[in-house]
Length: 480
Image (cartoon, rainbow, N blue to C red):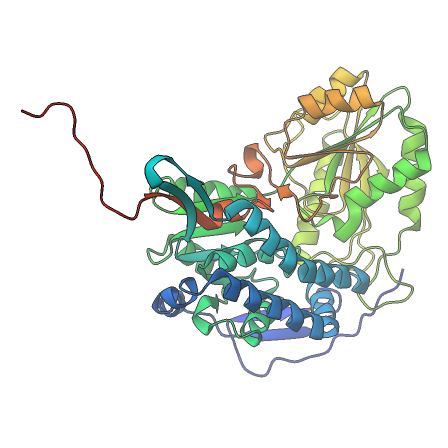
């Protein structure tokens, strides 16, 4: 394993929010806590100016934003890798995806919210056009801190909203860089406001009467509280993008090494810190062992290291020590309740949040918890037949994504029909989602506000008009 244990950077003056590199412990960035009232007031004061621009002007501004990202690609990649602990290549992929997201968002908005007109009798026309909500709060997550908020921010801005963005307190530096790129593209300062703060600041933004809606990505329990809160405010839009206890069913696998590679990618890419990561592997009891052996052999080969180490690591650290401690405790708890380790989870560096990925057979664990273990931990469940596999895969309150590896076209059709999930893949990783497609889940994974190419649906509302140039009315019943 390759690690750089050098710790550099000393904080001279006390500040409210600090960001440290998880792989090294070095201080990366610091800033004072933001003021919710001030940021919303600025956004509110400039609300009409941005919404009043033609959509062609707004989209041109965001294309300039794409050019800014292109020009700052190397610096953004390095910052993203340092702040999240993910390998440099993975950070580069995220910056590339953020760049591509600009044109995809513009095209998606045109497809979902384009102006439509219909001619009727006697010169009456009907028009369907869209208006922005006003001020939208955006709460970001730490796992993909550049790409993920853009799924909300870009369609919100294209629609004409102003946004107040609070990045995760674990990745504020890349959040600040994102907003700086928007302003460098000549987006009005009031149209994208940065709110630095902790969870308390996030709650204050969510509850603030000055916003017209909230776009959230994060844990389901936080999303549940937001859903309850916004139940008292039906006049405000709420879009929840939450996690999943995502299953892979491996069935009649013809090529065990290829299937193992796909399963390892699904479970352990980004150190398992993705809402789309696989959490459960469901296999046929009589045919499971050859596949499990291949997975175990591949896991042994995985390189774990800091972002800039060579050779390039497959996965980096978790976001912080608390996240690593929590996941290791969950793994030990599964063992205590009857789980049988296949590949042990461990701490290769005692004072840094690196984990070796864990593979554990939980078939005989009674009352398995329906939780999202957010990190490199994959549970194996052995079942006697495909019906039991589907039952096990659906034994969750979440419903974000699922994959079938192996099987026939007929078996996949059954899988697709019976899985309760927003993404149902065949012979592809759980995280394989096309960027110009919708993305969302059911159950505890969301509130039926899919993002991706459908994000325009919650960033603008339709206004229907019937129009005619001259006043013409007739009352032909009920008059003396």
